[in-house]
Image 1: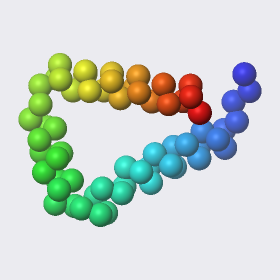
Image 2: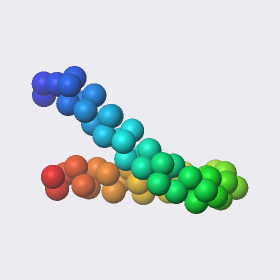
Image 3: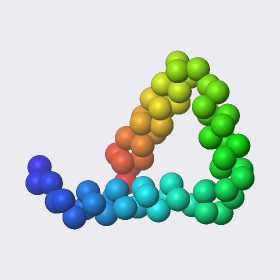
Length: 63
């Protein structure tokens, strides 16, 4: 497998754009959401993180 660094940088840049959408479009809602997330237990955060990673891997496999 040949790793093309430009593709990795493009993917990371796209993540930055997507993650910047909510704070730009709805900063107060984004702040409330972050506060709610900060109140969650570590176990719940790990489950959400795991589900997010599994979903991302599934999407990558289908694309």
